Image (cartoon, rainbow, N blue to C red; front, side, top):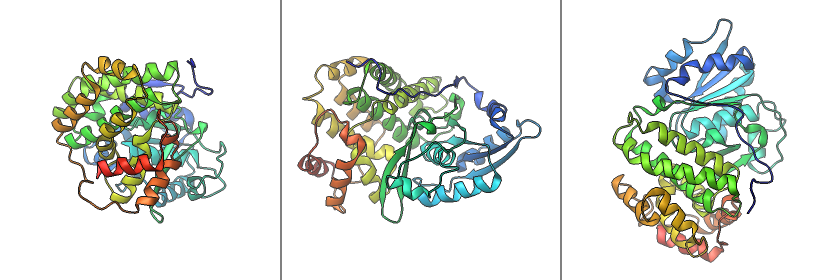
Length: 368
């Protein structure tokens, strides 16, 4: 077994404590006087944005940009990069869920890029032309705070996929469990099942190594032991465990890749406009069954880590969260394109069991 991947990329600094987000702007000041703070509607509505802005040091000039909602897309990132360039931002910070974080990360990473974002979405090589990126997640979740990956949708073509570069890694990650307080149960459930899925897929990925397996397995254990409690009460003392579990899973999959769930979830999410975590939750049981014959003892190790049979526990959580498939009974839109996009995905390429077009078609039949 590999001890570490060929290239191991981790955030250089992480702060983990309740109330830590209050010091975000003071931490950002070391990167320059002019900054762009990207956020979602909820941060403004609950008053947290104003409290954070009030803590800025003298001479710090910060412009805010509110994510308009929905899955992040290329039109939004073009608007954000334009605003950041107009502000002459020295750094970009993202405080929010996965959509906010991916937009802020892409903005920082492509700030001085020579081509428009669509070129990199289509596969053009990326150069290190960005500025510092700082992040504080408000969901536990996507793990995007720990990765070099941006997932965006081209609204014109309906293609949702990722692009990445080592320079996209956050210079500073702030994990503040208080930011989970007030999250709607559906958000906790969907983002939590995304994190659960990432921990599972990273652990069994063909790109896994000793360090990514350790990170993913510990993340899975922490997510499984805290997700239900935070679903019932977002202010639970378990919120810190859930946030840390999601972060560890993010560190794991950022350095190992994922699997067939994420290969499917991106084209399905783009066409049916469902939350990413919901798509993952629906696909996960089918993927576990598909991969079970090739992952050997890892299935038992994961079951032990979460205190019960893996597949049974996934199905139990889905029932507890009252997750209903948004796909059941619907026609499979653009089936051939979904199959092609799934097979072309880097996530699918890292699945522990080789995936054929007929495999994808059978999985889609089960999902729908």
